[in-house]
Length: 113
Figure 1: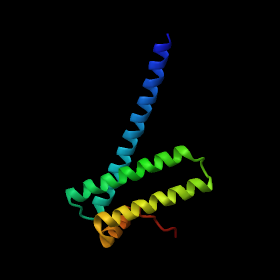
Figure 2: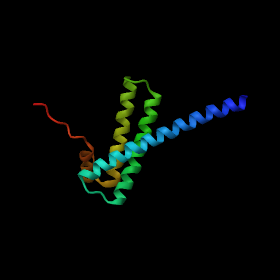
Figure 3: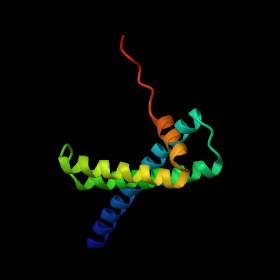
Figure 4: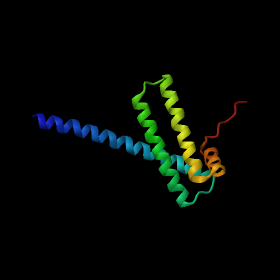
């Protein structure tokens, strides 16, 4: 009986982490598609961008898990994670190209009249 319960708990934990992984992949693909729709990316650039974004998303997931929502610590950790992502973009693509990618990734906000 203990083995069955242990197996069920392990299965739930494993399926939960798989769900989170799929969710991260989906968000990363959307991010890369958004950037690619606004600027031209080579296949190598897309792969590099995916790798960097997956690392950032996993970091954000861990930060959200570790810190309580709305706390100053959470905000600090998110800022640090975003800065690390920006530095990684600059290192991988160069300053100008990284700025183009960041600009292309931002959503167009409609101005209220």
